[in-house]
Structures are given as structure tokens and as C-alpha cells.
Image (tube, rainbow, N blue to C red; front, side, top):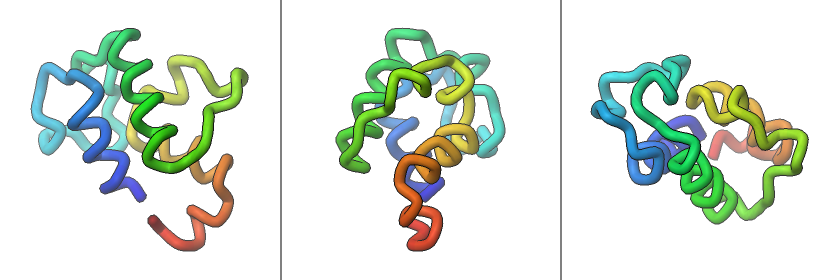
Length: 85
């Protein structure tokens, strides 16, 4: 799943650096993601995984890293943690 998220981040987060230079715990905001691009990222993730982030997950910490995004998605889609999308 993290590789799928990494691709979506690369395509939609507007990072100032190459995604390949970041590990999964790197702060995406420090890497150049803006609040506007985080909304684009959120919409792309919702489209890819077929769900909507609930209001309580619409905060900076959820979108801070690939790890935190994966954790949020696994919490919303419990089957995702078993199938390793």
C-alpha cells in the first residue's frame, strides 16, 4: 500500500524534491507540500481507494508522511492492512 501512496504523493503533493529521496516517515510539508496540494492529495487518495476521509481525519498530522497516510487508510479500510494493496 505504501508504494501506491508514494505514487499518489509523487503525482499530487507538489513536492519541491523527488519522492525517491524521501523515506516513508519524512515530513511531506517540509518537503514542499502546501495546504492546497494536501487537498489535491487527499482527493486523489479518496479517488484511488474509494472512500472519503471523515472530518476528524482532515488535519495536518494525517497527511504529514506516507506512514501517517497509510495508517489512516488502514484504519478506514481494515481489509487494506490484510491485503497489502
